[in-house]
Length: 127
Image (cartoon, rainbow, N blue to C red):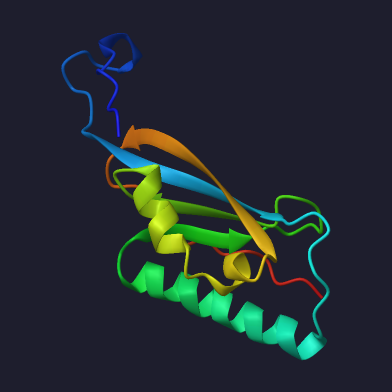
């Protein structure tokens, strides 16, 4: 993956730029005209999809993953630590939702300060 040269003009203090790192952002989208499956098959595929995402997170490869809260497209977002789109594609090939043509994965390189972390926040509990 190509790493851009640092741009000191974008740093608050020249010479104190934080270390940068490569990430890959993924958008999960519905497959247009995807094949119909039974409710049981859809549930099994979804369980496998969630297990796959959990495995990537536990292995330290996935930084963020989650569904969109509306019923539109895209369906979910992912952020991976990774040096290349090819590496993320290879690791994503075993996702049951992709293998069964339920979702498409659109990938984009992301370059930002190293140490991307998910900060837990509390959302009000709705009724």
